[in-house]
Amino acid sequence: QVQLVESGGGLVQAGGSLRLSCAASGRTFTKYAMGWFRQAPGKEREFVAAISWSGRSTYYADSVKGRFTISRDNAKNTVYLQMNTLKPEDTAVYYCAADFGRDGLPSYEYEYDYWGQGTQVTVSS
Image 1: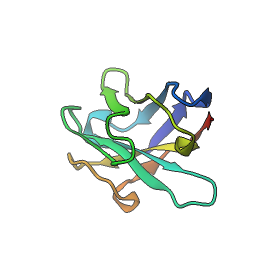
Image 2: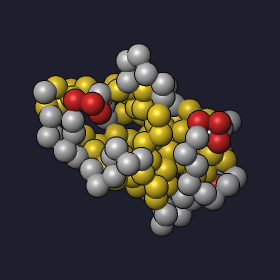
Image 3: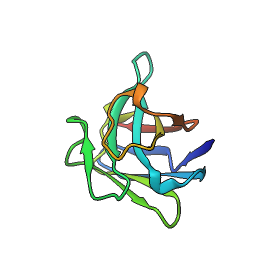
Image 4: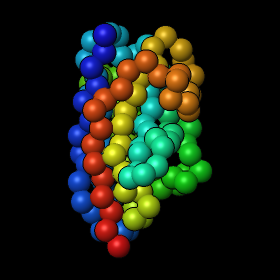
């Protein structure tokens, strides 16, 4: 089993920045591709970004490309999502997820094995 705990959410003005963290415990962190998803009120959960085991490969949704950066520190069992130039439409609950045993860049929910509880990000206009 893997436990994922997100932190770093909050309220920020449009144009501002936040950094989300996701701390993992349990099985070997380096054997997980990691991802971030988000769910806005009244909408389905959507893919945001993914990172490979080593951290050398990343993949982003078009809506966040150039503004968000996913990274990981395998020594700390933590994945990050740096969010810059935030927009009101980025308001959502953000979830981190772990895909065990496959060194890819998964972008679909069904590809992930474990999920965190989510952290709220609210961007005011």
